[in-house]
Image 1 (cartoon, rainbow, N blue to C red):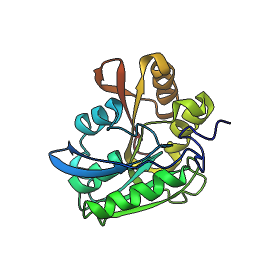
Image 2: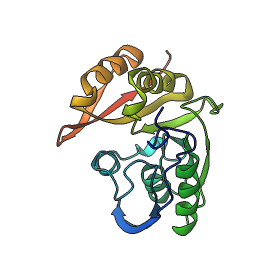
Image 3: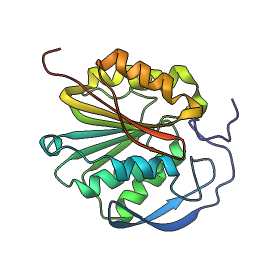
Image 4: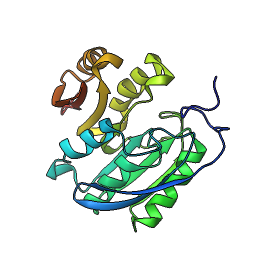
Length: 206
């Protein structure tokens, strides 16, 4: 595997930090980024679209949110800042990205987060998340992406939601089909520049 791309435990590309500010969910964030992490120069369009188009439903805002493949943290930190009552957990396989995410949480005064290493759900043991969000690592392959979709079901509470962003050309129709198959429902809540935001809800009594 090319150790320089972001879906790897320890990118060996030379560190070259970047710092920028960005407005998400009405808050101005300060971000540190670096080589070897996903979308190092700015917040990628897909993550922005998910952040701005999905609001946590009121009845889930007291619960827990999990960001699978959090990178340096824009999605998880945005939801943590916008929903201070929620407990937010963020996981990634990339150690450099996780270190940046921790520093970005601190730099933005966000305390309702825990950030740790996990290859998808390998080190995620809770089964009571209200919301799971993901901008899945397309380069890791369809099997990994579909694992994120499929295994989300067992980690969600009843009425909990899985929210993902995926480009049409990178497998959105196939992800939509998989979510329908796993959850029995899927809704596309946004579509822009070829990016789809898909939401599935774990229905009661299943």
